[in-house]
Image 1: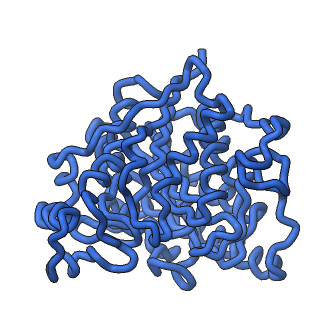
Image 2: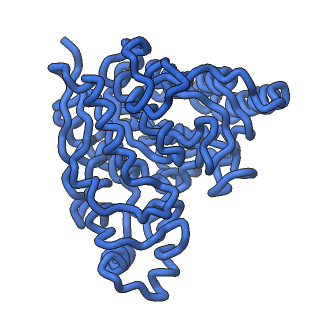
Length: 377
């Protein structure tokens, strides 16, 4: 009997959302669902689509300070002041939009709902497409992120006594989530991201490993510009997977930002979604329940196609070979490739493959030196 898989989405998320001139396209989740439904990837007895529930004020205050939530609500009603600006609200990276508090509560509530579905045994895999706001801190918006649903989801699981491992594959370092759990040993954060030397938010260096009892439970792989599939996957296998297995989590939280894909306008990595697919398949084989969230991805066409692929692997394991379904053309907006949801292989690595390989191998060695002894590896 296959494990239950739940996709979190409702058409309510298609109403409102980020302004049209914001790089984060609120329509990505809905477009992903359209592809998933078109391919029949929800038409299995073990799969279901569940509408999110707005995060309650009480649940949000478990991480966010009341003053910040009040400012967020006022801004959504057209009342923006200097104090709100000091909290990061109303900047180009954190635009104000109508009824933003209600929209963000719904998007973020999907992650808490997913955590509770797992805790109740009602799902083994959950994917909240509209989640993944990992930059928000307790009292400040950052990087298109206002309510940190990732923190709220991890807290919900940890409060129930679960050991939680957060694997963040977004191109941008999850600074908000790292800060929230920097001194904890029941929640391990592992982030594979473009180096802060070349990308916002400028954090996530190898030596950021946690403090106090959290020492060794914050793991960062800051990757060079041009990092490509083979070397990224090697870093995952050699540096990340042993730590995941040693930590032995009860639940894995998986941030699937697609901005590490080649051609993303806000990042500089060179992955294809085949690399993401291989990693997600490996994570599923570890057997703990998985709570997946969306995140970045600013080439919307590539993001929605890749999220649909991720859903198929999350829900159906490695049975993701749907390349021969005649999916090019209007459906995927790509007449040049008949490979279905998967990207075609990249033949170029930006002309500096050797340099990238050397830098990533150095990072792998640093991770082993910093973390492996702390985890008896």
